[in-house]
Amino acid sequence: MSTRLDAALPVQPTERVNISLQKDFDAGVHRWHEKYPKLGTGPVSIEPLVSKQWFEAEREYIYKKCWLHVGTVDAIPNPGDYFVHEIAIAKASIVLIRGKDNIVRGFYNVCRHRGNKLVWDYQGSSSCYLSCKFHGWVYDAEGTLRDVPDGERFYENLEGKANLIPVHTAVWEGFIFVNLDPHPTETLEKYLGEAGQRMQDFPFQRVPLQFHYQSYQRANWKLMLDAQSEIYHVRYLHSYSWPDVFTRPDNPYGHAYALDLYDRHRVGNWPGNKYFQPKDVEGLALGKSAAITSRGNDFVLPTGQGINVTNADDWGFDIVHIFPNLNILILPGVWHTHQFWPISENEALWELKIHMPSAATPSERFGQEYNKILLRDALLEDGATHEHTQDALETGAIEQIYLQDEELFVRHSYWAVEQEIRARRDGVRDSLFNED
Amino acid sequence: MADPLLPQEFADLEALAQAGWCLATERERTKKRRTSTTKELRAFYATVRPRLEAALDYLDQFPVDNMPDKEQNLFNLLLSMTEVAFAVEKYKGNPSGFQAIEASRFVPVHDLPSGAAPKPTLYKAED
Image (tube, rainbow over all chains, first blue to last red; front, side, top):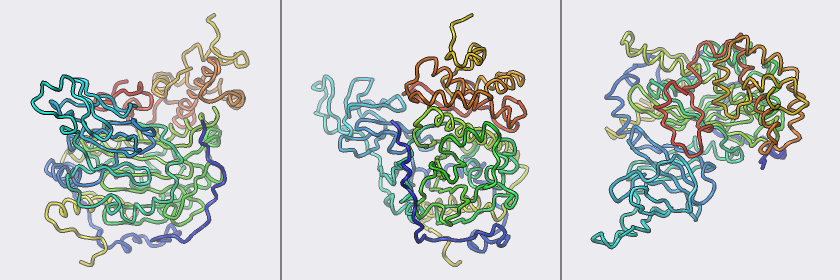
């Protein structure tokens, strides 16, 4: 049944954390460089987007070492529920299963008998046991081998011994992360740091997972991340699908309210278009449900302290980037995640998961559908630039790209990737906040 | 005349229902939009638009996850309007966006059979 947002959620304005209050869109054309001088202003090399060697470094020093988001707890609400996540760059298939004790555990999806893939479907429910289709070996949700058919023919008792290989798994605010490093150097909480703290009082779990998309793209994963990291492109690329959802006459290029960088992660706060004039059916639909444009109605979620950190009454959205490949977009009525999973230096899987309140009525469900298509059609436009850009970069015609001040998140992305590789490979970790 | 698919109150939309617009999944609705002509999209919009509020109000008498068959058909027809509205209101009647990849490449996993393993590399450009 409906988990409609009870209206009793007004948020008391409270003191906020680590804020850059920059409500004047035009307050200094190089304001972000002045805030983060360490990132510099020069052109950025395209090597990380086209180089096989760079990709190999990302495999070894980022994807096999960092905490990676793989799904949310609401995807597996009951004991025995499971899903499988493939991490192509690490050649890993991970099964995440909720145990009778309600703890979510992750295991390599490999049967200990002769190495068959244990779970073949993508998600499902079980009685807290997983059995291998090949010879019927049975494991419980703690990964313990519980039954070996014809077991006395083996030369030792393997039950309780040849258990599933666990993967370090931890949950933060309902977000499940795994770490493929056998000995992670940090806890998830420490890894997320201040960016994680800012997510703490946003009611993520009151808005369930409703829609899930995947797209294979012939492009480097960082190009996709870049497209979801700045608003400069919206006025042009999205001139048909969303000409004026976020841009507006007094802020035509979508300048941000606050861009806060941490060494790996980042959180940004942007205004919306309070003058937005929807088309005919568009306006009707967006008024029926929680939407990316919700404003001043029952569908607006309380943001807590760390989200919409400037407390803007014309708030558009926040982007929370969790290194290396998770963007959480939080808008007034909905939130969604983008993930960019590398396959090779020029192929990646793009994954979108949309969280919205459960629809209480058919007309609310209609509004949700429109809202979903609004998002999807704009992303199809982003998808076109990913592949065109990859093709163009691979011609070798240019060696560098130019970034303006409002593209700070793109500049930070390349810096953070390089720093992580240097830190893990060379043992030297630089900080944005150190003097050179 | 085939058996009516829609409730009697919305018999004026029956021809669209018979033309295959009552589609249960986003994947099917997107494909229908993409494979329709501008003329067909504009005709759908012109017929459904004046009845949209009345149809939504009518359907709101029923539970969203348990509608009778004819009401479900009507609802699925309205969901097609979310696709058609983009083409008509934003893309000048063009079935797809102007500077976009094909919608079939953005696979709605939520529409796949439950438990189906998504093999994204198999969905490069096909339905």
